[in-house]
Length: 185
Image (cartoon, rainbow, N blue to C red; front, side):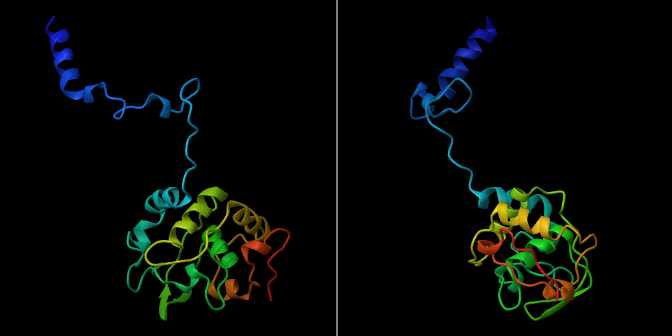
């Protein structure tokens, strides 16, 4: 009896008055219930979650990296694909990692980035879309199809890339990705 009284008391104070604006059953989306379709998932939201799980230790939550050890992503020419850097270089770098000396925003780094081949094409695209749109960065999204094409085209690369190797690969833009294999010089 005490449990029943406690339950009634709890519901009375925590139910929101059973008002529809607190819980709208039509908005529930599960098999057999609800009438509204689920909203598409924003790749930037998923990308931020994946970035936090996999990248934040080195590149930090603010995208500024760790001075002298891990390069920043905020304002990075690699992320924004400026100068000799292209979208395929960025994808290849994430897939296979990077080793040896590199220069980002005029600063030298000589550390290793681990390969992330175990992530799906969609996960890599989401992470790249996120980092290309946060911390003041303003670059177009990367599609999972582009990542899949670059993964296929660079499958022969088993080791981590060096900066020199990546920059020797011909630039490939996402719109030209289908059927275009990166050719090394």
